[in-house]
Amino acid sequence: MREIACKLHRDLPPTRLWCYGGALPGPTFETRSAQGLFIEWPNELPAKHFLPIDHGLHGAEADKPEVRGVVHVHGAKAPPESDGYPEDWYVPGKSRTYFYPNQQEAATLWYHDHAMGINRLNIYAGMFGLFVVRDDAEDALNLPKGPFEIPLVICDRLLKEDGQLDYPVSGNPDRPWVPEVFGDVMIVNGKAFPFVNIEARKYRFRVLNASNGRFLHLSLSNGRKFHQIGTDQGLLSAPVPLDRALLAPGERADLIVDFSGHAGEQIVLMNDSFQVMQFRVAAAKSPDTSVMPATLRAVPKIAESAAVKTRALALIENMNMHGESTSMLLNATPWHMPVTENPALDSVEIWSFINTTDDSHPIHLHMVRFQILDRRRFEPFFYQTRGEVHYTGPATPPAPEEAGWKDTVRADPKMVTRIIVRFEGYVGRYVWHCHVLEHEDNEMMRPYDVIPVPRGS
Image (tube, rainbow, N blue to C red; front, side, top):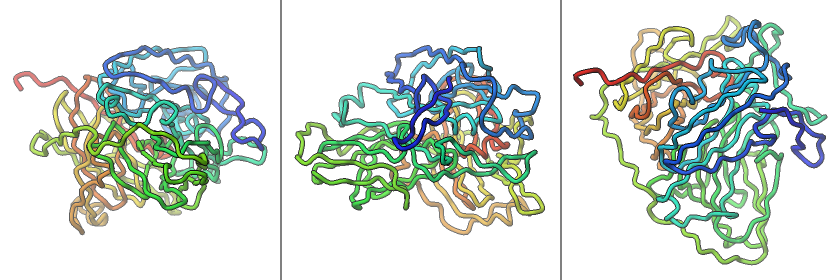
């Protein structure tokens, strides 16, 4: 973890950033399934933070060091001591070595800071990177690879005229926290509004939404379709044709785009009305031996009958008398209260996220992968006043591009979103939280315990 100065655009002066390994994004880890690795994460950051800390947030009190860090590999099935628990932060001059067993299928994971109370600031400063797991089953599919497989790490930022990061604050100097941050500059692989020269053939793009709060709605300026072949935790069962890909903060999408019929064109990747980046396609068609198979990888469904417990978990926003957001809660419970979720190792549970707020919350569970069961609209008033769920519409299954293994799910407003999870991996304490980072830093995160299988069961 280091401070660097990096030019985000050729016409801007260098921007002050905090990064891993001296680059934005940090180095991409190329790993293989079942081949574990140790990574040492030294903290070599300065002693003072350059973004506005809110000392009123739990975990960021004035008696805590300003600069702290701890690394979480998002999507990794790692033992608890290597997961990056938010309170296991350490200060400049200290280091941690974590073990990642990689006992999981090929997938696009990512790593980022997870320090309690200042996570949103550290990630906004640039502390994130990709962690790719490969395996033999994926290799055998002959997907585009080598120079034809390109990571796209996308985030939005606010920049001042001098090129420096601008992090917004509230009007209260004692409580500078704001509930969401949306930038007006799109940054891809560490560059603002970049372009890439490509050949007229198929490409594979591993896309990550590393924004603090912005949801991405990605499309091509020429209106052409592309295919999604994978999601957070690896390949889908079959490619899904799309004209727009939706990624909440923390989500990943594995995309195949065929440029073979677009020689000589300049195609822009759009996020709604924002230009993200440009593809400059070579004038001549290129040879292409890669394929996009009709089937990719089996995704066996977890039967609802396998669940031993169903949990109803409310997502709540607290407001002040002026109608301003003051905090957000999971299961109506702040961080410091006793653990309320304690699944047994290897057990299956259904978690129902009852979203009473007006926001969509990307909910991430550490250590596990899960499947989305459905979403169903309900009336929040009855729930808030009587504790009753009154459905106002039918259950909707996940979209085809969500029907694979996930680790982050979009819990939409005034909807009950159900996931089914097998808690395989390790016994110990983990966390689940909203991946809108401003929400996470202000109470929308809870610990959960994976406990040993009870005797006699």
